[in-house]
Image 1 (cartoon, rainbow, N blue to C red):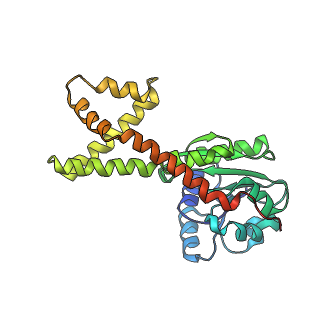
Image 2: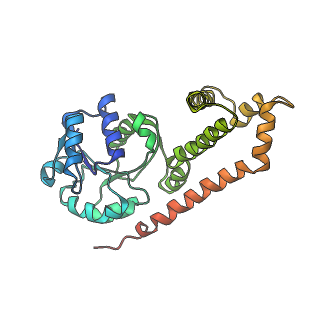
Image 3: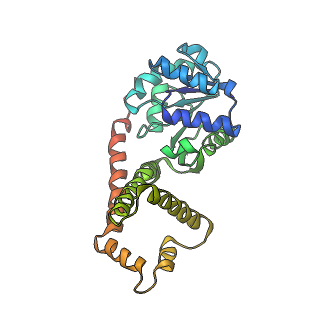
Length: 275
């Protein structure tokens, strides 16, 4: 299945790496181009034995899947450059935050199958939480191809397009929230007398264990938390500080604001002007 990536950044590479490793795509079927960074293309060609270059016809002719992995600000220009090579049989997959399916359809100038995807940076280690939204032209076979592609880099869920802003605020930005918590834990560990070399693996294992507990048990996060809290114990003392500081409410506000910002960033792509 010929798959062409327009854009060669870290997310494109994560998907290429995962797809090859899982067998979702063969390296010989992957074509990659970008705006002007030849060194980056050479790097990917050497690392994954894929096709790279700037011959648009060679890159795109007979592509089953075209992955739009450029920055949103470059969307209109990039789509106009490739529209002559988009056919009714093509599946366009967009990784661009905020760029709507309607906008992509309008820019291509024809009915075409479009999938919008919101992975996160954990794709680099095969642990992305990805949501995808499909338009009406996506066939069952194309849907399965998209699911296979994103399942090669982690968990994938199909959602409505209007839910993608919420996904962006929750799991798209989510790794950064967890890293922020880890920063606090590392600082606290130092202040209570633990060396960084000791604290870091303990923090990482704590996160991994908690994630596994959430994954394999039927209990809610609240139930799992309360199971650790003995009356008068250390956990209760710590949680009391978090509750007094309204940390839970602040995290809710954080995700709501990130979702709102995603909506704001997408405003220029809501009502495309016909060309």
